[in-house]
Image (cartoon, rainbow, N blue to C red; front, top):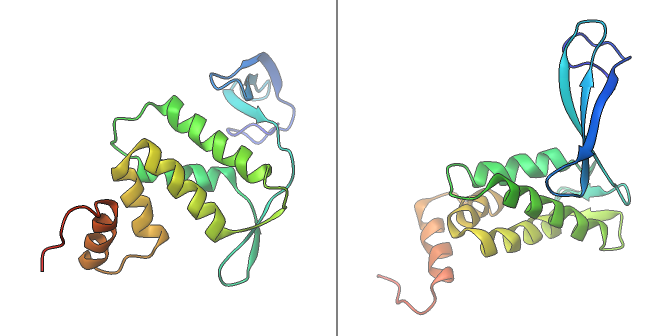
Length: 155
């Protein structure tokens, strides 16, 4: 593993243990060249996934990109980081278990929306605003109204 501080490729593992989610291994590493210490995580990857964008463009699935977008939607929400990690791991496992290596970005968005809806409605609306490309405040109104169909819409 390359040292993030000096770029040395000969780093040493000093400690390995299961991470809190028990689906990854946490490794403490040491770089003999610069003395830097850092942590890496190792996860099981069942298959290489490819995301098919709505434009038709294909790109490798990036767990970190998924995690960033979910964490942005959950910023300043009262959700434990471990719960977010479990949700992300669950989404990735679900994608891997679909049986397909090519996954439309729309499918990924729907799975994320479903997971967020169960955990936090504010994060759900935040994610939806980007995923569904809201352009105006009316888009938010319509979306929130769909969440509460029993209340009449102001006209």
